[in-house]
Image 1: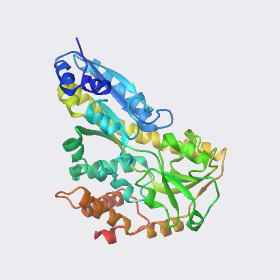
Image 2 (image 1 turned 120 degrees about the horizontal axis):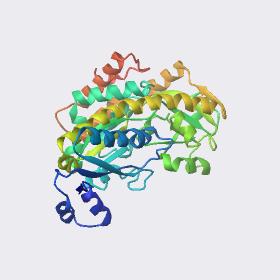
Image 3 (image 1 turned 90 degrees about the horizontal axis):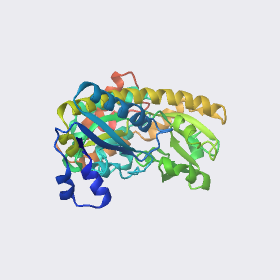
Length: 366
């Protein structure tokens, strides 16, 4: 017998009522289950989606078949075919997809606290370190993700991200003064990284090429693997390694109704694979950065910002993390003080061997 665990999501997609959908869900004792999984990004050049498709989905299906009396089939929808980059959180919430991967940068209001990674630029360039640090931070401060369950009917099952942020442009530059007046694309929460006088423009990976090609943007804060994979080097043939850092800004979440309808042994396997997914995606990002930089050097000039320039840039942002902590305290009221959260975040990175180029902890009161 087959159980369509995602019947609620399918009904929502077809415009049917929630009550009708709920009554159609078969009991959890069914042997075969179908789950819908999706993301707004392209699995080709985007590691977290590629690993959803190439690692998470097949590993869950194989292990459920091998270790339980059940089977799972996935209906996969990437590149915005089911949910777009701005729709995935809501898609999981409503059951349009049972499992979704999305950048919290596109949900600044609804996942404000999870954007904490963006509030300390020039962090570790290693995606493996960043993912591990954020995982430890969430374990210590579960308030960071509690709104996912309390308001949005889903739970975080995996953390991932991209590789080390740099800056690609259609002009050559060395000092930050040369960025003044230039239109630079960024995801949203990293727009404040830009020096004063720079014109920040919101973007997404699916729209960035056209924005660069038409002059809406003259540069983009981006990762080298993705820069090459999306061919952004064609309209913007310069890339600078700035070492803004590898942010862990990708949430892999699961609908709570779906989770409750599945047998416990199946849920345990999903969580197990999600934990491994974090590791394989982080390693993929490490490899993507290395191969991306090598490929870029074959087609455009690639330069690196000096440590002294990083220090100057970071010092100009020294008070910004404290401003963001105050914002989080007002936007996500609760028992935790986000200045303490960010102080601990800095400490965890220091313990991992990373030294921030500015004293962010001073204004935070660490």
